[in-house]
Image (cartoon, rainbow, N blue to C red; front, side, top):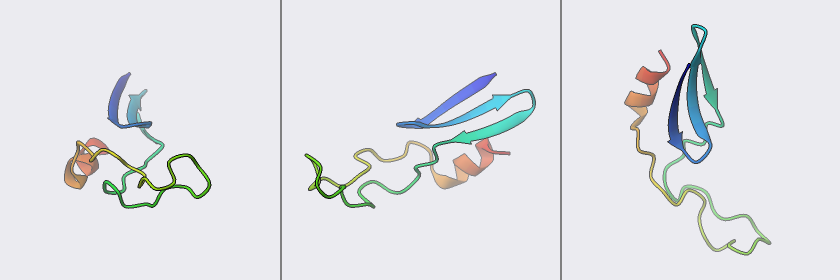
Amino acid sequence: MNITHIRNATQIIHYAGKRFLIDPMLADKGAWPGFPGTARSDCAIRWLSCRFPAIKLSMLMR
């Protein structure tokens, strides 16, 4: 088994010849507004940039 941590809960798991993409939250940093009615609704979701560019992610999923 091989686990690649992408960001927050997003992971790619290679197991028994299969690839699993877990919780694919791949939007750019600040792409979504905060959730209304929450303590940090003024903060955009995705505080960190994704450490893998889209092309590298597609290669990891092959």
